[in-house]
Image (tube, rainbow, N blue to C red):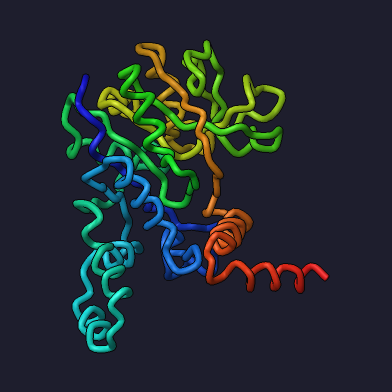
Length: 291
C-alpha cells in the first residue's frame, strides 16, 4: 500500500456534554480559540499536512459546522461594502481549504463508529487519517505531518502519542511498546483504553489522531462493545496489531484538549499570548486576576 494519505475523517457527532449548557445549541467544535473555532484549527492542520478531502462525520445538531465551511454571500457582500478587505479574504478562504464531505453518524455509540461510517468513501488500498474535532497540537511541523513521515517510512498504521502522568492513564488509551524503532517512533504490541496507573504498560497516551488502513473496518465490524457498552477505536487497533505492525509516533508540540474546560481555557490563553496585538493586555489581565 503506497498511496499517499489524502483523506481525513473527523468525528464531530458527539453531544459535547463537558461543555453543557453552552453546547446545548452550539457544537463544541465551534467553541472559539480567540476568534477561530476549534474545528478550523483541526482542518487547517490536516490541510497543511497534505490532506485534500475532509470527511466530517456529523449528527443532526452539527449544521453550524457545515455552514462554517460554506460560502456566506451576504456576509461577503457586506464586508466588501465596508472595505474590510483582510476580513473578506479570511472568510472566503475558509470554504476553499479542502473538499468537504459530510455524512451522518449511524449505528451504536463509540469512537470507532464514525470511522466505520466513512468506509464507503475510502478506497480498498487507501490509507486515511482520523481526527477528533476538539484536540489541538501547536508546533511548526503539524502533528499529522509528523505522523505521515512515520507512515511513509513503515507503510503501516500510525497513532499519535504524548507523555502522560499517572492521572493521564485514566484519560487516554495507553500503549504497550514493543521496541523503539527510531528517535520518535515505537512499534507497539498493545493498546489499552484508560487502564489506570497500576495496569498501564507505559506513560505514553494515544491522543485523537491516527493514520489507518482499510483493514481496520473489518476489525470494527467484528469487535464486541467495550467499556460502557461503547465501540472503542483503540480496541479495534489492538486487534489489528495481531495481524500487522502498528506504530506510535511521539508527537512534538504543545497539546491542548479543547474539549475540556481547562484545556479550552489553556488554549485560549496560550494562543492569545502568541498574538502581538493581544500579548501585553493578556499579561496585564492575568497579573490583575492573580493578585
